[in-house]
Length: 218
Image (cartoon, rainbow, N blue to C red; front, side, top):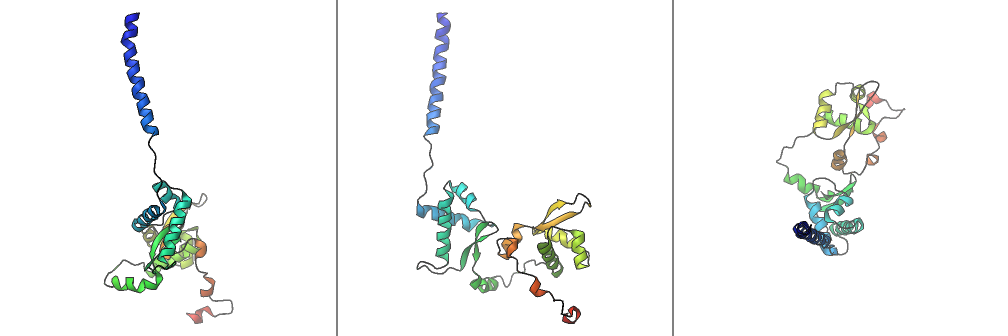
């Protein structure tokens, strides 16, 4: 009996001691909060490398800092870029778009960017694709057949192009007809520089009224 106690007691003591040391080591690990200037610089670094609007919550989670502190840092950067508080106006600006924040070229300096890319040949959407995209943007959710009916042409290939560009997405399938209904994506909002579909310009000013001869206007 005494021999068994002597054989087991040392092992249990070693295990308990190691366990307590591990627990203490984990408890002592803490995250140092960032100072105001350091947080501002960290937020700016993230905004510089992101290729899509990023939410305040995502930035706060990444930096392990309160959302309110991140919001203050973002607004401070925005004011700085806008030339407020005696700073110099920058060629870029910080805007809230598509539910997040991203740095954009300032509109006043679009000409400089156009000159820079003058010799480039980016792939542009065709007129048919632009018209189809406009129909989907204003009428969503809408099926491919409904788009074709409005445009009076087959839109199968155009819809595939818009899907591949990430400008539209499949929202749902109609349970009765089996038709897929489409809508626009956050990427379109980003490219248009607007925050929501409600910010789309009114289309009525571009349509003929009841007293206008539509054919004569063409």
